[in-house]
Image 1: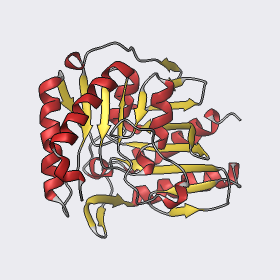
Image 2 (image 1 turned 180 degrees about the vertical axis):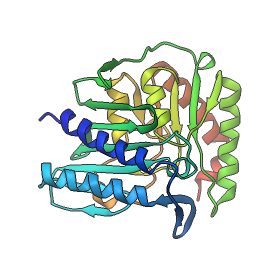
Image 3 (image 1 turned 120 degrees about the vertical axis):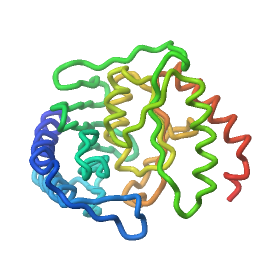
Amino acid sequence: MEYRTFLVKTLEDAAHIARDRFGKVSSTTKVGDPTQVVTEADIEIGSMIVEAIQQTYPTHNIIDEETGSVDNRSPYTWVVDPIDGTSNFAQASPLYGCMLGLLREHEPVAGGFALPAFHEIDTAERGQGAYCNQQRLQVQDGKDLCSVLISYGIEGNQSDPMSTRSECELFTELVLACRGVQTSGSVFDAAMTAKGVYGGFLYRDCKIWDNVAQHIVLEEAGVLYTDFFGQPIDYRHPLTKATTPFGFCAAPPAVHGQLQQMIATWKKQSAWAFEK
């Protein structure tokens, strides 16, 4: 089934709303997590995307970060992040995006994201390649970690500050090992990785809606996309996993292997942090 036309149209509509609301929104923090921000634009975009899915694919399941889940007992599940990088968006930073991905059972099969401020839409379907607008995306492999920029997303764990301090030890080693570390805290970094501007993108603590759309785009662009520790990501029974951690490590195979060596060393040295 061809999904690209639907993805492009829906993401264009989402980007239009985001640009129209940019710099004009108020924000609140989510109950129980002061690091998570939501705006009225998140709700508006999420509702628009959910409605578009229900009109076009009425039998499919839906997971939307803000409005919850729709269970139609389908093998297909759309995963929606209306605004990824809401903290940036709320402060009028252009480093945010809108994400929409599709799982068939446990496999990402289609997806895309919009960077509204840059008028960019990246899409992919399984086996058909990844595209930025009309341009094919294909990263180069074989580079060394020391020669590339790496994006690393990190958020403070207020309930377990020692975990964050431990993760900062890994962050320090990464800073020393690569050409530079960037962080937007949003899908902007996935777009840079799909283009080969960044040599990799890591995030230890995120959610399913942060993953599915960029997963398929990056894989189709030639990036190896695993969980944070190098294992296949478990998307089985996605409707039950709204609160499940979904960290990731995404890089072309050569750099991915070097990142995993570094992560394995850090995990061994910080074994206490994984015994809880």
